[in-house]
Amino acid sequence: MLLPKLFILNLCLSSMELFNQLISASLSIPEKQINNTLSLLKEGATIPFISRYRKEV
Image 1: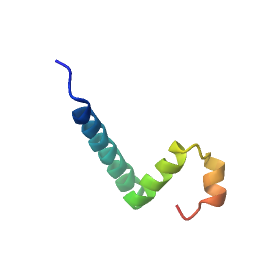
Image 2: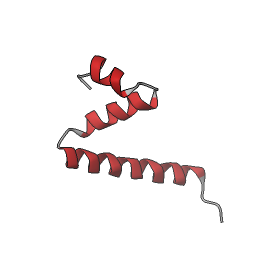
Image 3: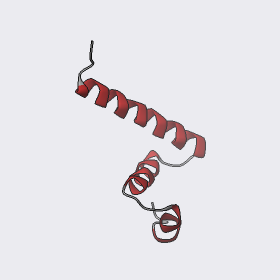
Image 4: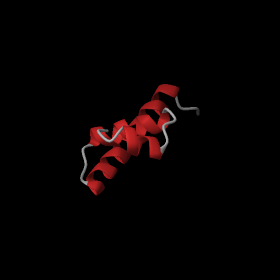
């Protein structure tokens, strides 16, 4: 039986939320900062770019 796409999408989002919470707790930084950093990486920003120009993230 194939799972509906919406179920799979929700499962993936839930897994990502848990992953972000784990990183946040491990590094003692706000979860919002994790989300913002991952968004920048997803958009193609490089680590040197983030460290130089996006320090507030």
